[in-house]
Each structure stands twice: as C-alpha cells, then as structure tokens.
Length: 348
Image (cartoon, rainbow, N blue to C red; front, side, top):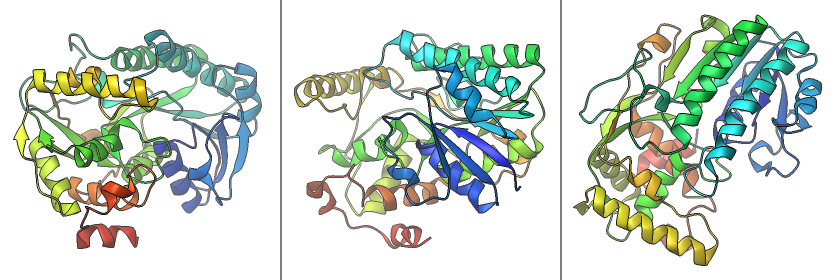
C-alpha cells in the first residue's frame, strides 16, 4: 500500500489492529490519540503519535496534513457510564470534524468505522445485509447514535466532495483491547459467571485482525458512498458459549436464561459496579438485546476480497490474548485449562 495514513482512535481494539496491518503493508502511520489515552496497545510500534481530540477540530486539521488516507475508528463503544448526548456528540460531531479536517488537508479518501447495528436485528434467525433498516424498538443509546453518525457522515462527505466508505463490523473479538470492549467482555463475562448462563438469540463473531484487513480492502477497492458489513459466522449464543467453554477447558453453559433473568443479573452487576467503582461486565442495556438475532451476511465485502477466519478461531485468538491480560483475574485464570487451539493462536 505504501501510503501515509492517519488513524483516529489508534489505541482502541480496532484501531490498534488496523495500525499493525497498515505497518505490515508498508504504510507510514500517524496515530491520533488523546493525551489521556492508554497507549499500551501501540507500545514499541514504529508510528508517529499525534495528540488531539475529535471534538477539537483544530487538532484534526493539523493531524491530517500530508496524509493521503484517513481511517476514522475513534468512537465511544459503551453501554454504561456515558450519556446518550455524549455518545451522539462524539459519534456525529467528531465524525463531521474529521471530514472537515480531511477536506482542508486535501485527503482523497476517508474510511469510517461504523457498526453492523445500523442494519438492525431480527426476532428470528434471519440474515440481514447492507440494505436492511434499523427498526429495533428500545435499542440501547449506542445504536441510534451510530445510525446518526452514518447518515451525517455520508451527507457531509457528499457536500464536501470527499470519497467516503463505511465499514460495519459485527462483534469484534481479539487482541490489543486495552479497556476491554463490550465485544471481548462477552468472553470474560461468561467465564466469570459461576452459573455459566447462556441465553436465546445470537450474533455474528469476527476477528479484530480480519476487521483490520477489511478496512484496508475498503480503502483500496471500496466504492465511494458504499457501506460494507465485516462479519464472519452467525451463531446462536448457546453455540458461542459452548465454544468458549471448550477453548478454555471449563464446563458449561449450565442454564439458559430469558430476558427477565438477564435483566435481573445485569441489574445486580450494575449495583455492584456502583460499590466497586469498576464497570459492570454486563448492563441492563445489553440485557434488552437478549433474544434478538444480530445475524448478517458479508457478500459485499467478500467481493472486495474479504475472507474472515471461522468464529471459533477468532474466539481462540481472543482467548489467547485475554487469558494473559489484566482483564482476567488470577483467581479465574487458574481455573482455565486452555485448549491446544488457544496455544496455537498465541504463537501467531
């Protein structure tokens, strides 16, 4: 590829994996992060660190100068501790600031990290694609803010004459997740649950490294104004939880809970969070998504060359990193008997 590129949110789960893939392809990478950011995920990487904030437009203008391509991955992905207005301000105004900065710096193309949730979910196990519409009632605040971001971004890019492509990852699991995103938290929450509960519904699991590759494919070959779902396998939650148990050498899942049970468990987790001052592993907002199918097809991205690994392999890679991270307590770690798949994933 050999370009000079800017990556906003470069220290996040997707950003950190994207930076590594860009470096592997010979790019000169400028990493845009806040001064308060934990840069552990970028440690020892040959990147130029540029400090700023997507809500401070002047810092973006300076960061974009001299870059040929910008990947906007910076976002707040949270179901707890952030108000709906803050979520929307960062998603919408932050993205508009990025586009304005790119226009000022004569950047030719922007790749926006959106989300599969903008295409909604289903009450039945059916596949959705880029033509599907979001009609979920009572969706967590994060969901409509991503849709608002998407709509505002394409509208403004067209006005500015910027090339804009959006990639829409599903549930992204993998390494270099400093703050434990809600996606990787799925694994830790299940392992930490003494009852090893599972629940109805399902989702699409994809590797963070594959999502990074998908970003670059979209940058190279994506059609201006187009959106691309980046996902892998669609699985029911019971199958996902069984795979995690198998990979970690622990029994379970033991019981299947319903929406009410999930809501009560999430309420208890949130109450505990108030006392411990630590984020809950699950929230009432997430419990409201129980029973839904977040299943998607990725043929449009596949036409660009996107070929993701199976969900089980993605989970093995995530477990291999998580098991050695601070996100898994020593007390939990000693109960795990990691499978050969996990150890092989760690060697990659």
